[in-house]
Image 1 (cartoon, helix red, strand yellow):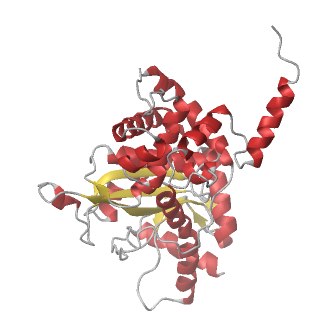
Image 2: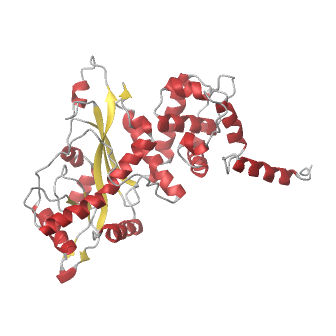
Image 3: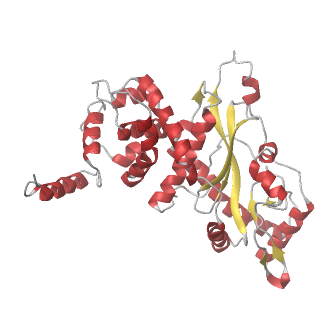
Length: 381
């Protein structure tokens, strides 16, 4: 039997109505799901906006569903709403994204979506496992073409030649019970329980390399030295691209930039320290600080969007938390990759570790000193 005459016109009309209601591009799933949510909201008359709930566009949401669909469907699932309806892939992704971006308790998410809090927990972890398997390609060191784009942007925006990225660390708060004998190792220098996230970020605020899982009691140098990135740089298998010629025949190698908590290395350039700085050194620090801001904003954006890692995690599983952090970084990158834009509405000085004081590292390498001086002379000229 062929299609009923006029059905296409009705479908177009339905899409127009959905767009007018603020859910442009939505399909039957969203219409049904939004109606289901409305029945559990405290103010059901308030219009439900897709992006306000999931912190991603519908286009990105559909892409995430396509990534994890096979993994989620491969596992037999009897997870259901309170009315007995089995959760679809889209339902599971919606629940998991809401759990990750709101930071609300399992109970609150369950009440909002009309499911049991244990179901929220199961769905979220199934999603995390699927994202680890299917989404990891969105967090990788840039290829030759991509690294050239990054270097071009660092040079164009801030004047830094041959710069490949900015490195920074942030603390993921934890709330551990005092009876936990291992909890002392997680106490950082601000007397809080935390886990470290170290990230290298490109000029578009993508995470290009991350290290997490280490206790907050560790400072930046040992976390850096434990990373595969550090070992590759020391062996000469990373940041080993062509040198760039500056004026007077001076050449500079590839490098990244970081704050004063990191050691000054041949491939990691930190700002000048001390009070009696020359004009060239002061100018270099200003430019270095401005360029380094892209890493601060990326980490602030990560915590602001995926709030499960913004506040204190109550009795977190120390083995699962690094995997949750990884997936939040993957989602951060996917938003940039799919929507083809940088959501950078935050002010330049937005902080991601507001209560933490700047740490200082005195370790310097002579080659790093020489490179920094070359850059300072070039920028002052």
